[in-house]
Length: 195
Image 1: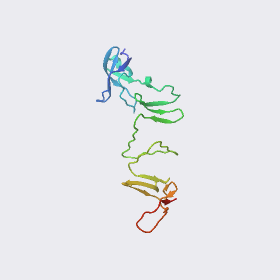
Image 2: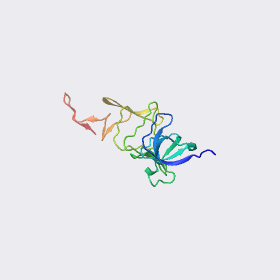
Image 3: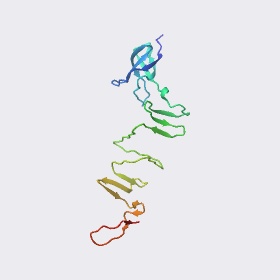
Image 4: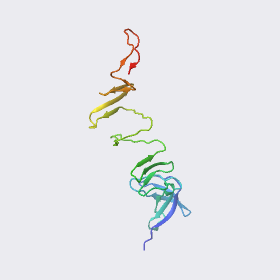
């Protein structure tokens, strides 16, 4: 009868080494210390912090053939409802949550960055709310529903240029058609715009 696979409790003692085909991490188990290959689900990868509890499997009873499954249940958000799911860096609290009602919430402790250097980012929603200041480092263009007709173009090249058929309103003053008060011939300045 071949040796049975054995499952033991273990704990990580060093950050993983990711220099070969599979990541390897140093674990302690039953007063012993040794390297083990990290088992991960397809598409999900991480570097477990030191003192992460694990399940360790020895294949065919061979203590030198070790695999570990890192666990993070002790860091979970308690009280998740049926079907809810979360993932993230639980040490710092940056977590992506999928809620019972279908909402998706990303809680980031610091910056959030999206990179699409060879494509575009599309957000489809009837309403988009931005709470905070907005910085745009390139041009801004507003297209019609057909995504072909430009109804507003904003371009910054040291000066601000605004192109479009609509009106730019500042309080009650229309930029394209307003007139000025107290206009007199000569080199003097005019009065303020008339609302």
